[in-house]
Amino acid sequence: QVQLVESGGGLVQPGGSLRLSCAASGSIVRIYAMDWYRQAPGKQRELVATITSGGVTRYEDSVKGRFTISRDNAKNTMYLQMNSLKFEDTAVYYCKARVAGDPDVDYWGQGTQVTVSS
Image (cartoon, rainbow, N blue to C red):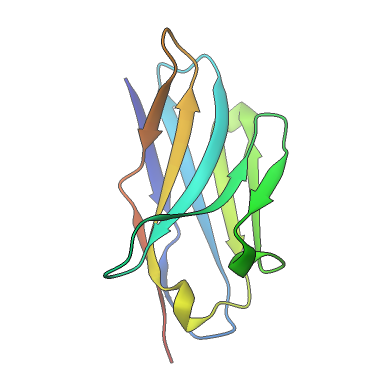
């Protein structure tokens, strides 16, 4: 079994920064792509950023230039550095990891709340 635990959420003013972490633990041989999603109240969950095991990254247009996704494969941990935060970034942020196996399985974290408010 694999567990993902997010941390780092909180309350921040517009223009501020937060750094989210997602730590994977359990029976892990290899993690393929890892993703950050977010879900705002009344909206569908959306993909924010993706990073492959080789470090290739992709971002949703609204966060490009403000958010940076990274990972430490030795620690099975992923990060999301969020700068220049806006009101519309308020959401619950979830991490997802595709863990190698037979078959490969996608695991989700429990979510961490990010609130941007003045």
